[in-house]
Length: 90
Image 1: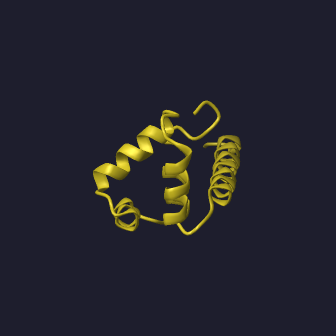
Image 2: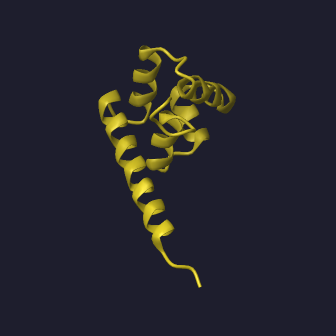
Image 3: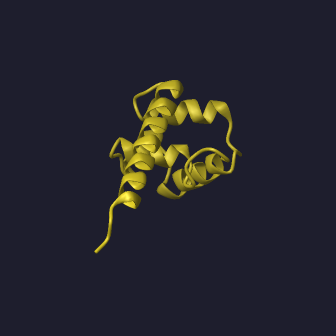
């Protein structure tokens, strides 16, 4: 996604929630490899809205909530990186 995290929103949301790939895959009743494929498809804008909703539900949230959480996580990371870049090194 052009304006999203490089790894994609699904992976970022999962990380923000502290949810392992294995745990989310189990909730979705798919393999870890299957989850990796979903995350890659989403990052490449090649995933259906129905699948996004299904994954969001497996993370105990609605799609809109999940995307809002991911955006907040991304903004915090950007702020942190900006502050770190401003620190003087000795």
